[in-house]
Amino acid sequence: MVLDRLRRGAFARDPKKIPDGLWEKCPGCQKTVFKRLVEERLDTCPECNYHFKMGARRRIATLIDDGTWQEWDAEMSSADPLGFVDSRPYPERIAQQQAKTGLKDAVLTGRGRLSGIDVALGVMDFNFNGGSMGSVVGEKIARLFERARELRIPAIVVSASGGARMQEGVVSLMQMAKTSAAAARLREARVPFISVLTNPTMAGVMASFASLGDIIVAEPKAMIGFTGARVIQETIKQELPEGFQTSEFLLAHGQIDLIVARQDLKAELARLLAYLKPAPSARGAHA
Ligand SMILES: [Zn+2]
Image (cartoon, rainbow, N blue to C red; front, top):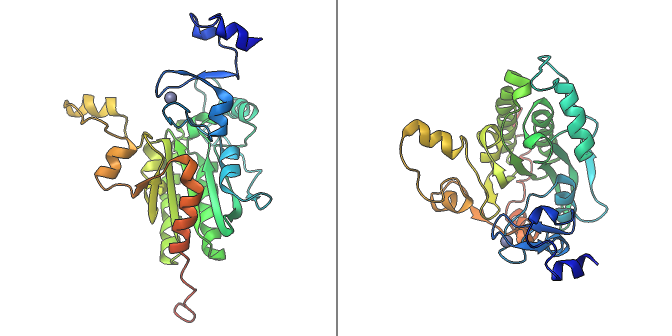
């Protein structure tokens, strides 16, 4: 029935009348596309291959072999260290984000098999408060690296974040140092870490663990950077080059290693992991 009405152009004049959940407008090509087709293509546009934002649970399902996922720190949830109130108290904001997403915070971490390879995987979710990194995200990512090191299995983190979580103030900024230190210990132990950057990966996350991968992969046309382009432009009073802060720009300037379309991501990660097998623990080499 909805299809009939669409054919008659009932929704054509007012995109707001497009029924929820059936069609969506692609921000890449501006076309209205059938949502089921988008989902079949792992949340990419059938017309232009625009990569829509993908939630953490769905991302895990697309990367991890069925029945092998074991979540870590599933119950970890944020405290309110500063008693922070903006338009609403922080605990209320967290409760609302939890109800909206079904997540405790903006990252899921755990262990599973990717094409048969044992990995430690973390996936951020932009839908939870803009994927912001507060104490829970930082702690879960740091623990992910520590467990990967103990288990000697490669770590993969799929990032999607607007940056630090301002409601946690300096506690949030500290997560940058903590996650970076954990990534460094992982590197010292010669256990590989692949960082996957998705749209958007900005600010405190990009300025810490997300840019520290042994291999840094990005999805096409993702926005990746530290400060937003507008603020930079206003500060330096210069025009920024075209495509600034996109995956393609960063690849051309040597800041990332490769761009992989989402449909190929699992196969590509498996290929990279085969190259990067953790070095066998050097017996007697350390105290
Ligand atoms: Zn499109």
